[in-house]
Amino acid sequence: MAIVNIDDRSFEVADGTRLVLALEDNGVDILHLCGGNAKCTSCRVTFTEGEPFSLNDDEMAILQAKELIGQVRLSCQILTSHTMSLSAGITVKGSKYDSAGPRPADGIPPSN
Ligand code: FES
Image (cartoon, rainbow, N blue to C red):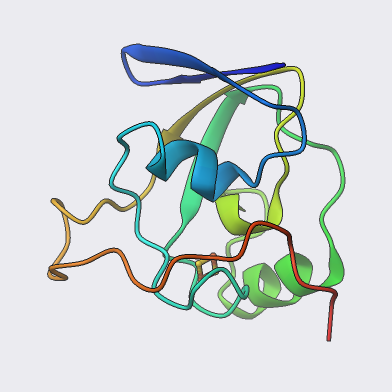
């Protein structure tokens, strides 16, 4: 099991759960406007503990394009493991959108 700490909450999820879904399914209204396809960066999170070392090619490409390397990670491109402490970058409530976007698939799609 993985432990996710966010703001003043903590919850357990199965190892290998897509982080964006772990957040959403535990009541965090994080945006995922592109449906988890590493195209929008709206699912961004900031880690304080447990940040995965590696980025996949799609996450690297969009973070480089948006000049966000080293600042945020994409919760749609990360699978849960161990203990992760983080904050959500953009929530539905804190945005101009009235919904989070299409629900991402359970698994991370292969890089294009
Ligand atoms: S980059 Fe769009 S949902 Fe993650």
